[in-house]
Image (tube, rainbow, N blue to C red; front, top):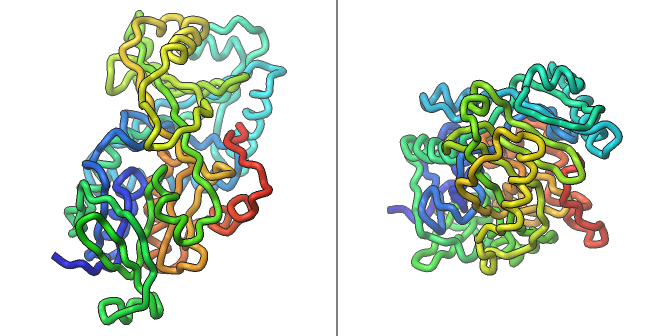
Length: 405
């Protein structure tokens, strides 16, 4: 087998698998994907059944990407014959006078700026449309957007990898990248547009070279990029979800119940039944800072109880038996924005970081990273996701881990 490739993709999670597919679709066949675990493993953030997909976003730097995001998923489904997007519609709910109402206003402004239709609902309209919700407060504000739903992230990742492999991409499981070195070019890298340098990727058993390397390593990113001069720190937290079996199944079936986001003192979100005979919900950004070496992955009973209590108060018919609870890591940049750029000082190393909210975007991010590798630039507006922006290079700027709504 060869040891030199046009591109090496480090990480076969949601973003890395999509990047491999779009590289192959763009004409590259000598692509190597290195995955330190087995495909589909549960150590990162590309497992489980759901990731919300929606047009409603807190900032237009994401709002202007949502239409191409949907188009990207449609293209994958058409090419593969696999359904990865499940459309349910989506609710954003807040109580008047709470900080959540400002979040809804931002969401609405971003959707309006991008020509996305949505409905505004008061308490009576919400109760008539979705009687599953029981909200005691009188002043309720809600937004409904019919194109919302969720991505089956495990299926999407597996589909991207399978499509990439069928186009000739080589995937090596249980092969951890230990270091990246930018070195003087050789005949193997000559004439590739990478100037006088190539990249070496060192694993436990072999050393591979490539014209370019794209790092999609999520919470393992810093170990690879800090020796290359990484100026930011990836913060890793442990988040928790629970699956709860409804007391009455039919009202919470996919065709009857939308994805939802509750904008209160805490940000809750949830899904209809899919994958398990249970609804799923979670609380956003618990700020339990860990490392991949120290996280226990054990769910906390007190968080499970808190989430069940939320259901009992707001969606009482869903608050049946807890089926399971599980955790997953968040890997967050200092400003919670993506990184989609060449590594400063290393033009043959590309960084793809999803900042713990890229599940819905991962197909498009793979397309963008492939464009950077093949064309040197992207057709999409990615200037805000540069690797040399102030939040990543100025240590005096305090990290912000909330998504501002």
